[in-house]
Image 1 (cartoon, rainbow, N blue to C red):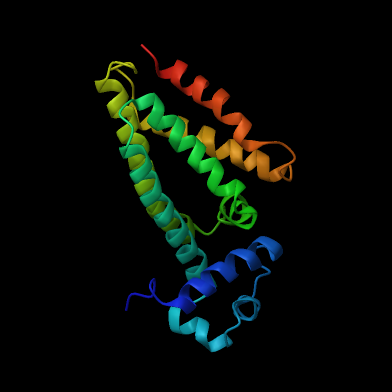
Image 2 (image 1 turned 135 degrees about the vertical axis):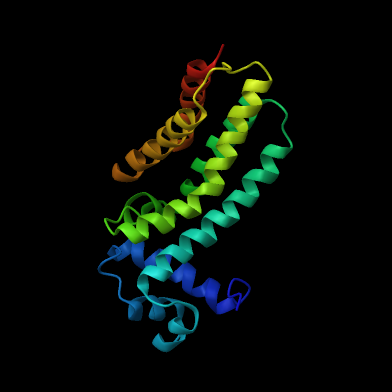
Length: 194
């Protein structure tokens, strides 16, 4: 059964983001999520196996939507540098626009549970493939060095973006995250340039 098109599924996902951001993953009971979503506790189990399934599903849902948006936006650009700038800007915008989602993705998804980490990493693969494509295009265009280790470059780009957002969340969003785009973009491009 594809739950993604069901209104209650989306209600529960959005409620879970709010509840987990406010209470932390471990203190977020399914009953709190149900109450926030205005559904009966049992309704949650029509869509999700347990709380971990809710966390993974919310990441799949939000990241899936985000990947589709990024692919569309960067397909309209030809230059790898422009594609990279758009990716960084969109990543930051997504989390600036949704404080609760920023808290959940940057703090609560970092669980020590090995199975959960594996599932989260599976979801991230689509996003990392977009980074790989940008790097490959930059190499083909002669903007980035040809001998780059693509896997290492991908980790560097994602790690830089991710750590910048985590720091911003940890500092209670006391500064303008979007003001960091130019500096990060310049740093990455100069590091990869011929």
